[in-house]
Image (cartoon, rainbow, N blue to C red; front, side, top):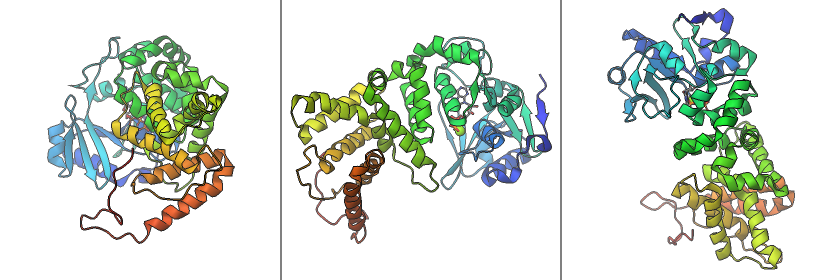
Length: 415
Ligand code: ATP
Ligand code: MG
């Protein structure tokens, strides 16, 4: 099929808005005699008038050929080799045109057959993600009717939604992610297919699903996204305990935390929250509710050891049985949770001494405390005192020969 092409007068993308390194990679691939286009999320974002976070390139060059062209290039992936061209911290991902089966319902297990440009876009998830941009002619190339969909702000799968969700259930989460992020209107067929296929999500690799959820906590659209996840019954599949909690009166606090995260993520120059802080914001209301029913309602005050155990149990209950939660994030979330009760103990009469632990991740405890302040302004003076002490303690730190910050003998970390 011949694609539709849109000239720069029609699509309005200004080539100067595109990352110079991405343009350089495209030029060099073309000079070496290959076809090469910008593809996927980058083209979509440019057409929506948003600055793309990253740029993906599709090309006729085979991975080994890409490697020969760029010195700063690493081939990654076992099943399907991708080239990462590095410029400092920035990575431009270059993939060879690949074919996929768009009609077979079975779960995709291999994805490693080279193909034509048309096949390469047909295997992609949504029409808005299936456009090429040719940086030489400054054309948008459309095999999937994605251009009119972007203009209508309409979200539609490439091919039959039911088949495409069965092949790769992560696409259902991606459907909700694009609705939440861009306020798009989704096709009825896709919504219907999601309701029919939602249990299939459990067949996906948990690491891919966890990555999509973590990215959404960072996205600035976490509240609408998780609302959609709950409404469409997807959250119930992968995090049943949390989905049930959202139905209770205290469940609304989860959305208040997510809204606060979104608000600060939209602030210009706001530093990015670390992932453990984001995860804590997501589960803290459930933690508070549990401590209440297990201790406070029984007239018991939990001590820090109890809180530590409850924190572990909570992470298990919230993320199991589907997710295998990474150990490092787990330890950090536990530490943020327990530290909250060191700083703001249950007994308001107990005077807490301000002591900043030697823990390079302690800033996460304070970042989370700041989120709590937004919901409960009476905590503000405590936050101010602790963060002032933290900032002061950070300044004149002598460095040991190993270069690590240390001004006292190392203690064993408690958590
Ligand atoms: P983001 O802005 O969050 O990065 P994105 O659409 O760029 O969104 P990526 O995960 O970076 O998402 O994927 C890049 C491109 O790869 C997508 O635009 C889409 O064309 C394709 N793609 C990603 N995931 C899938 C999938 N599960 N099935 C088919 N195609 C996919
Ligand atoms: Mg992307």
